[in-house]
Every structure is written in C-alpha cells, then in structure tokens.
Amino acid sequence: MHYRKTLIAMASTALLFGLGYGPAGEAAAENSSAPSAARPAIKAEFKTIAQTSEASAKAKAEQAMKKFKNLLDLQKKALSETLKPGEIRYVYINDKEYQASSAGSSISGATYSIRYNTYNEYVEKYAAGNTSMPLQLQQAPEGYNFFMANITPYMTQKEQDKIHHQVIAEGKASGKKIYVKKLQEKRIAVQLIYNMPAEKNGKRGVLGIVAEPAGPNDKTVESEPATAQSEKLEVGGQEVMYTAIDKMEYKSVAWMNSKTRVNYIIRETRGQMTKEAMIALAGQIIEASA
Image (tube, rainbow, N blue to C red; front, side):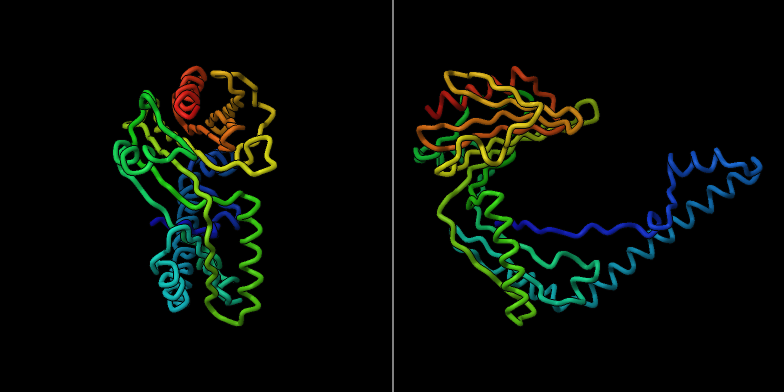
C-alpha cells in the first residue's frame, strides 16, 4: 500500500533576510566596493548567517513536530489502518495552531493499491485476464528497466480537487481533532513505471505508462491536455497527441481509444527517448490493445 502525503515546503530564514551563499552570494560579495582583504571575511559572514538561519529554521520545525506529536501519531494511525479494495482515505487535522505552524499539511491521504515488482508477475496475475483495460508491451522500452506496476483506484483531477475541499469543510465542521473520510471507488488506473539503470549525461530518466478510464463525455485525455507544444499524429490508425516541453525535460504521447473508452498516456521525464522511440512505443500499446 502506498501513501500520498502533501507536505508544506518550509522557506529558509536566510532567504527571508535576502542572504544567499554559493554562486549568487559569492557574486554579490565580489562585486561589492569593500577592500579585497575584507571580501573573504564578508563571504564567511554571509555563510555563517545563512547556516545559522537554516539551523534555526530546522530546529523550529523539529520543535513543532514534537509539539504536535500526539496529532501526528493519530494521523499516522488513521492512515496506516488496513485499506479495503478500492478505498481512498483522507485524514484531516482540525487544529488551527497546527495549521498555522510549519509542522506539515493538515490533510493527507492513503489509497489502496496492488503492486507488482516484475513485468512477468504483472502480466500473469493481472494483465493476462484484464480485457476491459489492456496494457501490455511486446518489447521493453529501450534503455529502461522495469520498476513496478501499480493498480490503484482512479479519480480525475477535478474530482480530487472537489473532494479535497469537501474534506476540509467537513473536517472543520466535525469538531474532531482528527477527521477521517473513506471513499470507495470502482474505477481503476494501471501504471507501469520504468527507470534508467544508470545516469546518462548526468540525468536518470523515468518513464511512466498509464491506462485510465475516460469520462463518458470526454473527447480528449483529461489528465494530459494538449498544449501549445503539442502536435497531432496518426499511429496505427489511432490519432495521438505528442507533447515535448524542453524546459521541463518532459515528453508525452496521449490518446483515447474511443471504442473501449480507455485513455493511454506515456510520459518521460529527464530521459533520452527520441520522438520516434516514443511514437514506436505508443504503436506497441495501440496494437496490443486493439
């Protein structure tokens, strides 16, 4: 079972004071009008202040965690209780002091999932008998090793956002310090995750292949909308949308099988796959799911 928790990022006190160290901090010191003999001392002072501020922020965060230990223990207990098949569970900490602190997010969740650690196990125990949402590959993606397959309850992003706000409203109205909401979802998503065995050019790519149900009125893939960088292509008689965002080091191919009402998305981050390789991989899946 895998838990998805949202954490509040803590800003360093050093940044609040506008003090940085490293390349930016050094540049500021070097360009100052201070005598050259004093520059090392200035840089050392900047570094000391930044380190002290970071240590102070860390200490405050640790102190906050200790202060709210009871609440966090109750949250952890609620999340760790056995999940039923199809269950999505939310836990809300209804405490204003906790919410105003940097101890963590007031809402977290856990989702029932089935994990397979080898591709053969996934095929034998799940994919071989699943005709409603087929997702199989004839060949492994070049340059990638299989990491895991995950079968989880499915909700659209809009549905997740709606439930998120609903849980907060219900949690505040409940009068309970720990509010738990359990949902049962019949829809599922299938995820195949691959990663590169080693870094290439200082980067280690991750490849995800997803099959998820399309909404009854959907005409495009809801979870992978087209962007200005997207282009329509045809692969094996199927229209697909190819998107490459260089600054994000991100590529995707997405399409909807209008007959089965299943969406398929291939996503690669920080990887080395070419456009041609991504399209060829899409072709494999389209052929296997026809």
